[in-house]
Image 1 (tube, rainbow, N blue to C red):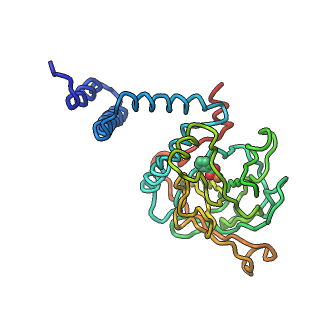
Image 2: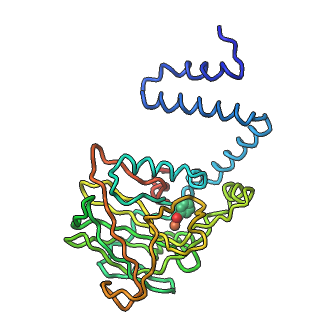
Image 3: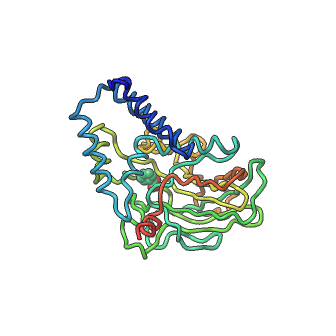
Length: 302
Ligand code: BEZ
Ligand code: FE
């Protein structure tokens, strides 16, 4: 019989789980217990601090609704979502476009539009044309790739934050042409603060962090035989480009607005050009969606 103390407790807990039939579940739980115990020893966690953490996680759970996922926001603000994205990218091909966060404002059911259409239906602001090509790792165009986009308005709010879910604005789906080329009109991207009215916001304030995301527009791009790409483009020069609260920015995703672009399909408008590279699908289809569509959360809740 082992004496349980602050060291032997770790092996005792891992041993008790050693009969777990699913090998991956067994591996994950053993590593979780080891790291959690090591962390607890490292900070010499007190009962008050342990209870504070339980209260905080309870509040995070209680803030979740059918339309809001405070746990994903917590994962985002701890850098965990970005870490999962980076590991996902590493399992794909080196030359593919980097992933970025899906975030809480994606919707699966955005309207299908024609190339060149505008995603702006209600919000005033500076119109720009977004264009480029969806290619494979060698730079060959992927015909008919599906390009889904969404962005906030000039006040930094998404349609879901302002209207009931039947009103859609600043989002759309486009089918690229036979060479993988796409173009559409939208607003010049704006930055905004992440939802700060819950326990995650309290944590951000307690850490004296600003809570902002730099100006960006989101993309989900897919085509049969390729890994779905979940990413975003970030505007160079934004005050928060180097301090994104959810760690979504990579250098290769930073773009500039071109006010004088003779190659643009709509040369009278300022333009943002970006070519996306998709990795070939190897093995089973794996999603890069570290985030959730609120509508999907609603469905799974029923
Ligand atoms: C977003 O970019 O929409 C987002 C991502 C993570 C947390 C909050 C917002
Ligand atoms: Fe966003």
